[in-house]
Each structure stands twice: as structure tokens, then as C-alpha cells.
Image 1 (cartoon, rainbow, N blue to C red):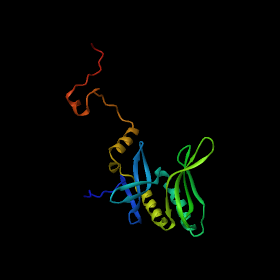
Image 2: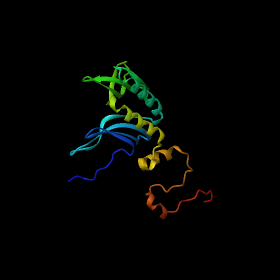
Image 3: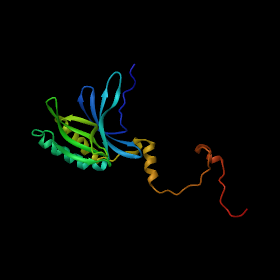
Image 4: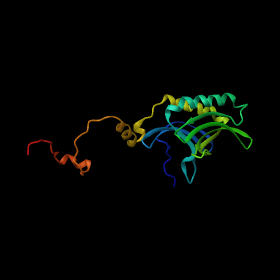
Amino acid sequence: MKGPQRRFGPHIIASFEVTKSTEVNIYYDYFSGRIWANIRKFVRGERYTGPTKDGVMFEPKHLPRIIEALEEANNLHNTMSDEVFLRLPKNRSVDLVIHASSYKGTVGIDLRERFRTPDGSVGWGRGIRLGVEYLDDLISSLKLMNRTKPNLKELGPQACLGFEMTEKKKKEPTVEGVPNNLKEFFELEEDNDEH
């Protein structure tokens, strides 16, 4: 018996189908205390429905540069071969690279992490490859994402907590060691110098 179908990804902005059982979802997610933009393949099947390892995540502030690089690739897709359109540093040792690649005689766009090691060697990490016929769908989805702010309530309580923690709040007195739902039954000792 099949359970209810559900959409994965906390705040899906757009999706488009690439095969009968595979779609690409463009969504915001919350991970390690930050909001991330994601481009990820999802599968639908009898044994498993949900996200795959094929995808990339990046800070939403980089959306304009990524869109610009994909538009450039889309304009040149009839003449491109192994060409790099964007190398965007994610941190000190990882770049997000957008490049054209040829595989089994077809040209596609690869969005992939590229690792640099201290000894100078380079390796490729996770990513997603799409045929050039999906570039228009990807670009329009990312433009929509760029105009859409993440909905913190849909990202879950952890996301809201993560954002609240960055704001300065007045520290409330607490009763240490007592669960929050029972604190109302305890009186707080007030600091006074009279003993």
C-alpha cells in the first residue's frame, strides 16, 4: 500500500520534469544555521520517492551571478564545448563551477563543487548535470527563486530559531534545571542585597 505522496524540500519554489520519474526541484532549505538555495534532482518510484545526491546548494546571495552564467551558457549552447561559465568560491577549499560538458555525444551544463586540497590537487564533488534543453526551465526557476524570499515558517522551527539567535534579545531570568513547560510553577529569586 502506498503512503500519501508528499513534496520534499521545505520551501519548493519551482520544479520541472526531466524524465517520467525524475524532476529537478529548486528550493530553499535550512542547514547548519543558515538558509541555502538548492538545485536538486528528485525521483519518484515504488521503492523510493525523494531527493537524490545529484544537486548543489549555495548561498541565495549568489543567485544573480549564477543566473547570469546560465544565461550566457544558454546563448552559446549551440557552439559550446568544455567551457567554464562561472567559478564561484563557496569557502576556502570549495568552488561552485558552472561549465559545459560533453557526455556520450551530448552537451550539457554541469553545476558541480570543485575541491582544492593543500597540495594543489583538484577534485570534483557532488553536482547536477542537465541537458541544454532544460536551461530555459532552470533559468526561469532561478529567477523566480531570486524574487522569492524564503518562508521561515515553512522551513521549520529550527530556521526561526536560527534567525532569532542572530538578533539581540533581552535576557529573561530563568529557572535553571526546570523544563520550560513547568517553569510557571516556580518562583524566581530576585537579586537583592538584603539578607
